[in-house]
Image (cartoon, rainbow, N blue to C red; front, side, top):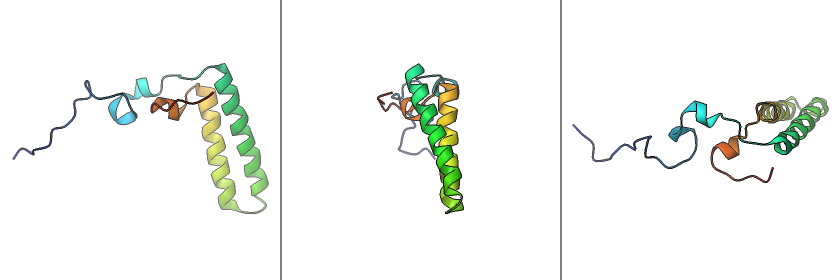
Length: 91
């Protein structure tokens, strides 16, 4: 039996997050050198903070390492997850 709701066609979907775009287009580099430098500095700072947090809490350290690692990934790849989802960022 056919449902009353219609499924959206990916070719006519509005631009947005990964659900509406192929992975290749979603992961395409979308930041310039200045944004890469900013994300690299943020990532490095979070990783250093993770090492400092190891003396206090392993859970906080793990979160800082994960955030720092992701920011470093964005810097190295030249890709920002927020921009890929359509959010305008300053850098």
